[in-house]
Length: 121
Image (tube, rainbow, N blue to C red; front, side, top):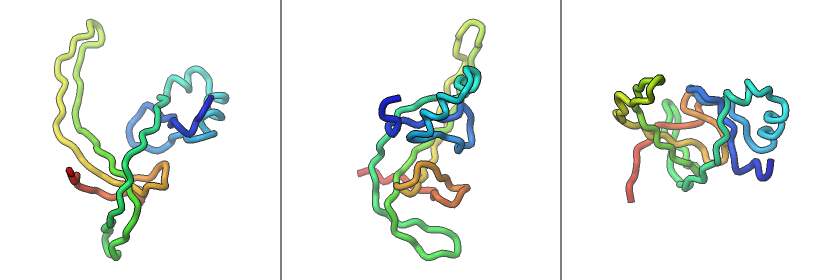
């Protein structure tokens, strides 16, 4: 694979984690069976804007850090697999979080990300 640093190999499931980055992508694709490959999605990496901001955590002093923001949209799609009709496609809300810019992975549950708010400028 050319330029694996431009991609992330993600499992096709929720809850985050278990992603492959950089040279680990090539190693995984060479090792995986066809069935294992079908359980993953190869995505081009986004290069979000990095911002300097402060993180606030319980019982800790604010920490200034380089962060990258992430917008998550809550919604659902309900359809009929047999005939392909879409019965409902609804976006119901959003959340905004930020993580340390130098990390590939790291969420709020792991203590590496924080809930955030959008600043539109």
